[in-house]
Length: 479
Image (tube, rainbow, N blue to C red; front, side, top):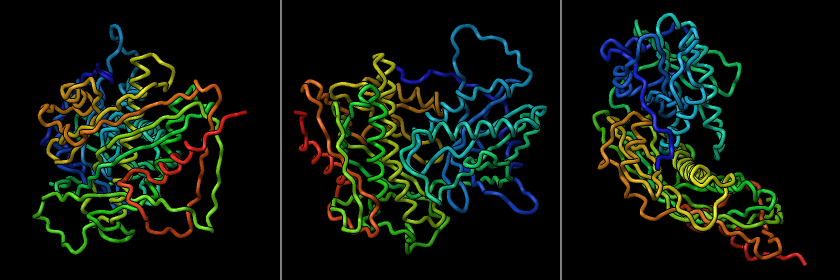
């Protein structure tokens, strides 16, 4: 059973050889952000096709860094299937026919398929020449809508170093002229800024890859007030767990990832070497009691039950090779851990709502969450992912990749071997006991001085599990 819309593809007719070298824009005076673009993106954009007089939108994905951004992939927005016969458009401009809701939903689906370190960097838009003047306003409207939608349920927090500029690329379908601009999505009044768009060969081939396997055992109390909307309750519980992951210490290649240390120290960059390094990562979470100068609070909550997420997940992250810092790599793998767990829970609850027609977010018993599978991206050598339910096959995954990413992927290229243990979500309903149960939960403020972790949690959330395990033993019944 398909979990996402089955879609077909719109095309745009553009010449590969004529196209986007002119997009290496040179602006007089002060330059905006620089975008280093993999040659596979140039090839993809050059092979797009479109009917005359129409527009095509698409996503640009890659990685941001304080100095410059790297564009790794481009994918056009698939055609949205409509129910019933298609109605002739009465709008004067093809820009008015752009379905903002569908563009943002496509961006959300693609963002779920990205490993750590990669994100939606922006959008491209192809229009006939007579609509070029209005294209920038359309792109601004779309880029703000996309960013708002895909970050709505994000569990990790932005840092001061996170780049909030998003790129837009407008291409004239006749002249092949391309205009690159950027917008600061955190500023609603942001105006378009010029940007530098440069194609390069082998941009991604030597990016280091971090990998780790994470064992989870997260217990989430379901309060009585939230018992009718378990989805929100589970998300709130995962948000607390995510903070534990963010605060954890990261080891890369067995060494602690210090803030200002280089990821790969003692090695000179050799442009002739394109072999990708694989670096094992681990997360250490402190299980210590709070220090005297820390403030903590405890809260007793009346609960109707609990939800538990158990199993092992496999995580990957990529980091650019332009003198990357260890802390940047640590942040990328931590965010992938958080994203993949959150994504599976969201996908599972969405599927449950559709297939069972149940109340929002309601589940019972022990049910398997979707399994993460990986697939190599064409030309770049990066691995993207999808989530396969127990009743799905690699054929279903290949079909989704075609729908969402415009890829023809042989089933033999889909790697299902990295997650051999199933991740489960189970719900325990305590309402049958007659009296409400109470869980003791506590919150500890960030310590002024962090000691090195004393226990290896194997990237499980040791602190959270310890607190919640204690909580389950402190169940009181109303007299």
